[in-house]
Amino acid sequence: VQLQASGGGLVQTGGSLRLSCTASGRTASRLTMGWFRQAPGKEREFISAISRGGGRTTYTDAVKGRFTISRDNAKNTMYLQMNSLKPEDTAVYYCAGASVINTAPLRTQEHEYDYWGQGTLVTVSS
Image (cartoon, rainbow, N blue to C red; front, top):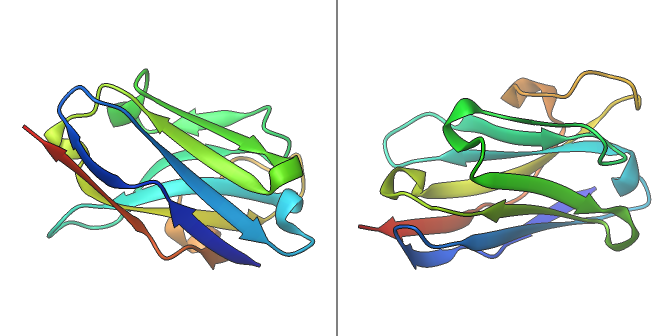
């Protein structure tokens, strides 16, 4: 499985962006998916995850109420709608996929993911 993240860019504080992550391969719809980000000089951190069917989601506290994760399995694509962006959201955003059974808990740790996209840069200006 290969993952391709896109949609990053420069936005002002309070603005919005939508990131996309397109998966290739026949097993893409069997992956639980997630978004991570890495700010300059910081460790990569978990942002959000979504179950294989899209019915379950989880978010880190820093983005709850501002970011929304979703997926369209017919298009093999996952999204991250980011609203009310803040300068501290500036980071390289990575999408990731994990091969798990459908009822497994959502993955929030880097080592739990098997596949990674290349990252897309989001810059929020103050």
